Structures are given as C-alpha cells and as structure tokens.
Length: 489
Image (cartoon, rainbow, N blue to C red; front, side, top):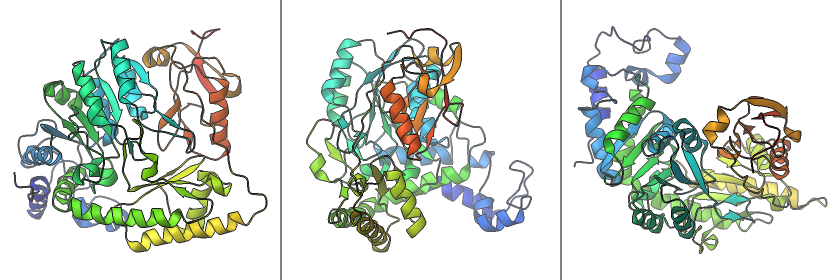
C-alpha cells in the first residue's frame, strides 16, 4: 500500500474546504456557535474538521470508505492483519481486547501490575483473573515484566484459561521476552493479548524491544497518542487472525465506542501512522542520541541514578526502551513526588510520573538538545542543594506484598458492603480499587484481602503527597469492604 497517503485526514480537509452548510451536529457549526475566546484559541482549522459521521466521511462503527482505508494502511504499518482505530483511548482498546476473549466465569492469566482498565474489563466480563506475579525491583521499588517460566506454570495449572495478558513494555520501558511467551502460550492454544500503551514507537526502530506484532502476539492495544504523535485519547487495536475472532472484536469494539466519534482524533491517527512509517527511524535515532546524553549526564550527578542497559539480563528484564529515563532520586533524601514539585516550581519542568523513589521522564521526537540540557541543569542544581545538607538520609525502599485474591473482582464489586476506617481494614476483603495514578496500577483491587503492609504502603504514598485515588471516599480515611465478619482465606 502507498504509506504516503492519508485518506482520512485528506478526506476531512477536502470536506471542510467545500464549506458545506451544516444542519447536523456538532452544534457549534465550525466554531460559529461557541464561546469566542475558546474558538479563537483553538483555531478555525481545527473546528472546521470537528465533524460527525455523515456519509462522505465514513463511519467508525462500519467503515467502508476513508476510515477503512486509513485502518488498512495502519494494519500494514504495524504488521497486523487488522487495525481498528480507537477514540476511547487505549483503555477502550484494552477493554475490547479482554472482553473479546473471556466471559463470565472464565479464567484469564494476567500480570498483577496491570493497568486498571484490564481489571475493569475483567470485572465487566465477570471473568476470573489468574495473577502472575511480576518480578519486583528491590532497588527501584517498581515492578518489571513477567517471566516465560511463570506463564508456562500458570497455563499448566489453569489449562482452561482463555488468554494471557502481557505488558510490553511496562510504563517504565522494561520488556520481558515477549516472543518466547507467545510461543509458550500458543503451544497451549491460548492467545496473547498485549497492553502496548507505552510501545507504539518500538515497532519502528531495531534498537527497541520487539513490538507485539513482531513477536507474534494476537492482539495489542497501542497508544499512538502517548509516543507516536497523534492526539491525546487516540489509539489503535492491532489484531492478528488465528487465535481470536476478528468479528467478535469488531462487535465488542462497537459496543465500547461512542457513536459521536471525533474526526480530529481519527485524523491525527492517520497522519501519525504516515509520519512513523516515513520518518520513525530517523526521529528515533535522534531520540536515542538525546536519551543517551541525558543518561550519561545524570549518572555523573551525586545522589542520582538513571537506569541503563545494566538492568537487563533476567527473564523479566529482557530488553528496555532507552528513551524512558527512570531516574532514582532517593539518594537525595527526597521522594520522587518532592522532586517533581521542585522541578515544576523552580524550572517549569513537568515529568511523566513520580513515585516514592523515582521520577520518569520521556525523551520523544518533540525534544531538542535544549530541553534535555535544561533537565540535566535542573537536576544538577537540586543535587547540589541536597547533597550539601548534613541531615540528608537516603530513603529506604518499601515493597508491599501482593495481596491475596479471595473473591472475583465482579463478585466483590457487587457484594453487600460496609464502610470502615482504612486503618482498621486489615484482613478485610476490599470492594474498590486503590491506586496511584499515574501509572494506574492498583495497590489493592476488589476481591483482594487488605493487609497491614498494604495499608502502610497506602499511607506512605498519601503522606508523600502522591495522587492516590479510587475509593469513593476521596479523603482516603475510609474504604468500602465486603460485609463479612471474616475474610475468606
């Protein structure tokens, strides 16, 4: 196919240039009917292609024209048999992927450090998660990937499982041996579903981990908007035929998708695909060059450590995306959240995320030597301030134990509940999610038994000012638990 074409973007622009008289939604009609200050800021061009699925523009739910052509081009670009555009973010694509293979009472094998969207889909489907514990990094205080051996063991113990979910790469850019995991799962006639939210770019450079489609996976929910140049909330679902039903995927995706699809988002997916195909290698060459520079500079700063290839060598840390800068800051006697706040206040720098011990910074094609040099300069100044303090204390790493699952998430979510103080909830079965977002990985999820260790970890994150969320009680003083006198063990 001609990857230089952008049928969707070209189609909506040509439609806008005709300047038709609109008697359809959206009601602002090219911006004329909206608040003038907002219209002037957003711009006439953007508002002129804020359109709806009228006949000339195709329909995302049943594409036969410019959307279908754009999706076919994307499928070829990603090495998939079928690619479906998502305007529900990668969360919508992930939920579609899960619900397309698993139903009520059926098992699905997943890492415990998955995004809440996977767990939400399992809850909606009424499925039963079989957790594979990821490898934990006692130095960084983060979870890595799952091992081939752990997947094989889970499949042997649960031969009726309908699928295996793998994160490739993790939020922090670490990958397990996905190709080997796929081979093992396929040996059990089980499909592999990949959360590729943070890996759209890896398909387009040979110094990156293998992408899901390159590794032979069956489905991958891929965030084009995160690192591929499309607009926020736009993603794709890549599908390979064989172990999954493409028609069922289409059906579930339509159920999960708004009928008022954004042509701004869809068009941005179309042009991002073209840009990645034509310029991805060159752009990522520069990204890797900038990331290597920053990593070397940061590792010369006392009290800081930026993770590199030395972390590799285990099944769970098989490969990494060098454009992700995991910067451990606990050597400065500060939490990642404190460093994030300092960078914001003193240098107007925003990071991707912070936790108790690290910050995560992304180097992308949008960066220059100026932006990365400013980051290094800021961190060097912070280190100078902190290392000069006699009271400096390196923060110890606390890794909480993964809770035991007592009930299926769906059963717990719909059970009779009561509200208890968080500090008195140990040994109770939780009925809601508690997580730090980003990254959105639950500390505890519906159906798990809350322990004193979990409570301590939650309180540590709250005291550090990190964005703990999930419970109905936003103050986090109370939590919802199953109304039973004793937890099932």
